[in-house]
Length: 324
Image (cartoon, rainbow, N blue to C red; front, side, top):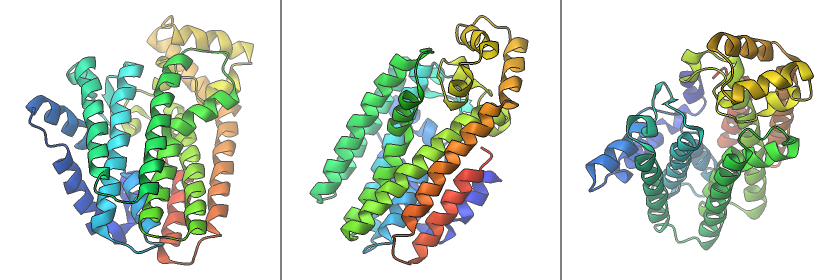
């Protein structure tokens, strides 16, 4: 139901997104049956396809061409998918979107090569785009994503990290690719430089809010809604914003360390997650997410009044209210 509500925000793009979905399946075709099956495993699990949506909407501020935008939307979604496959290896996660992860169904080696294959296919698709600026932006984005994956490994269970560490991590994890989707879509469509600038910033602020909301939902949503156990981030040793807000409180700190070290039984873990869910940390993190959303909406004020602007506004507001 929640996914349906999201899709209604850009219903006028339905046929274009169907074409992109078909192209994604085509892109994952491989001479290796194993590689193809592993790649399609995540694609067929579904997803909101937020990055392709932002590519298409940003392109509406210039000269829109679906054939051109497919060659941008497909690689950006492939990069996102590749990062998820790699993340599941880093986090030792067995479930995503209610299904076994690639690493759980096969193994870590298959998962890493599957992610690498998706990255490589993304680069191949981008060769169809002649715009030099688009290639420069995407190359920088991919570099930062890879650096972010290493930092995510380094930050695991690092209880002394601070607010700035967290923001830098989620920038590379989520916000950069959404920002890049907006920027490249507009650049290739030939939008003016001012419009490109504000779409890029809009994507960044929306991406930051989106990831903070994700980190909140890890505690506040149900396992059925999440498609994975509640509190997975904490169990995997990932320090998210709610935990940062609580770690200075001695009544939480010892329990946070214990759960990350695997020294709590399931009942104790559930009790801790319930306490976090009811704490002020959730309210505080929500306020920070809303601040990023406000900044995103401010960027839209500088954009031309085309129909896509209203869709971007509605999507930003949806992100602030979504339940999973």
